[in-house]
Image 1 (cartoon, rainbow, N blue to C red):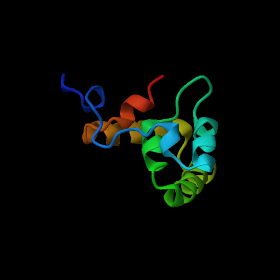
Image 2: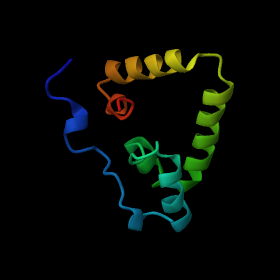
Image 3: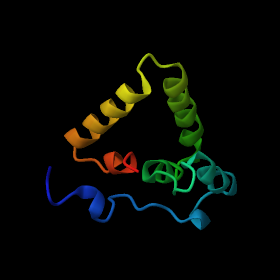
Image 4: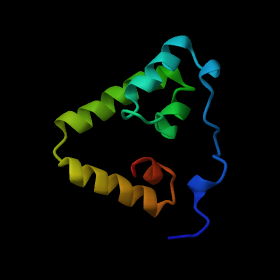
Length: 95
């Protein structure tokens, strides 16, 4: 893996502050975060486009709850894809 990891640098699209988001979206973000953690940066950035966030969450929930992959395989696939493009999403999946 590269020593200059993208997720350790400034993001290309900054994570918005809750004050920059619509009130309903700012209230939703903490609810979709893992217990005791901040929301994933990808979700926070997607919250800049609130009309896309709800459909994306519905799609992601359907994949997670009704998908054919096991949870383990789902996570391995996500990590492999994130690593393949040196994306910060891989870091979000590691506790």
